Length: 432
Ligand code: DLL
Image 1 (tube, rainbow, N blue to C red):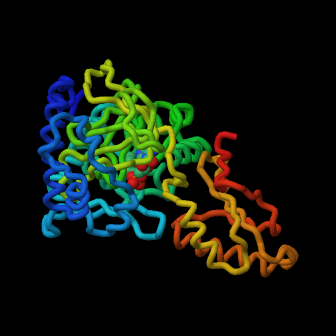
Image 2: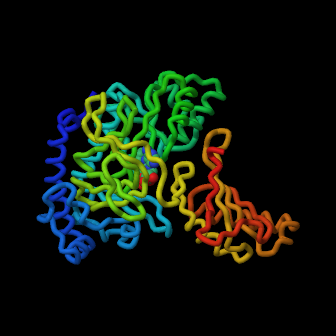
Image 3: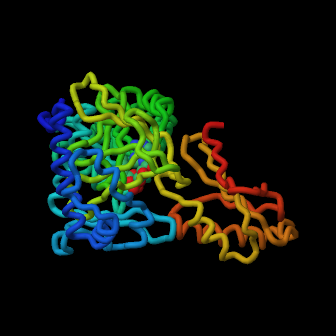
């Protein structure tokens, strides 16, 4: 089943022709409308008419999350403010988010990109789909919502949390597909299992926004019974979900190549890697009007295959994301940067500068974060009331900044490991 069969099954030659046209348009549009790009291109003597083939994009400079942050909120906006019809945002290291800006055309294209990947895994207008992503600035919920609505599904905007109610709705409303992060889907499935509730009407899981191994996905499937877990990928900087998604073959995520031009680079040398090699995904938008991105460095590690897929789709397939080249953590769907944690910890004079972040997966398969931090005065460990108060204050402040509940453990002075080179503060015990 296809959403836009003609586009999804174009020959490689046709795809590349379309990409080249759109690439020239995007570069020219960014040059004309975004001072940030205009300045950079001018310095390097670059312009759209220098682009003769797709690989000429490699001469253009990268765009990074820092560029978005430094130009927050509107420095990379290309459309006029009166033409922006939606703004989303995702958290960043400094507390300032990065924003996603959409024109009416962007929203239409976005809904098509999402509809396409949902249809590719078998969603039809007869499906009843529960969205268990948090509605708000996050792109996940509204992104999936409008794509699914465009297909004609019955969309239930349940939002995240209140797991007992999620399960009740699924039973009562005959839900056939679930949108969630893989970890939340796992949690829902465990609770349902504990309650002895059978959710066997559920046939498709549209999971994304964080990585999950195929083994993890299989466990979700076992718990639910009849559900097939599928993976889709995207980021706020590139609309949100809809950049790539699995088809029913589940042998990679088809990249929406008519809207996005992918490259794989070496994160250290910044050189473009040969086709098929693993590296950091870099993406140039091809149709985006609100905030076009030229060679955006996603920091996500993957590889891209141009081999034909048995499903008949010709768009390249991206391997499941292996990890990030930077150290952003994603806990219960929330992006957490170590530097955000550090910025909170340093405001407490009672604690030292050394800390450790321990990530575990609890028995309900949710990721948890423990922050170990050293006390300046070890005798506080014997003064329980004071110790508890301090722990509570730190936790509250972290909750405010991260919007996440974390465990704080105050430990003896000088008890944490020291490093001579780069500190390794993250201890990931999820696969231990
Ligand atoms: O997570 C967009 C999204 C929402 C995608 C819902 C799919 C479903 P951000 O919050 O900006 O946007 O986070 C983007 O999350 O750079 C990846 O590191 C990670 N990520 C997103 N999808 C996947 C996935 C949304 N399927 C960052 N597998 C990205 C692994 C993913 N990582």
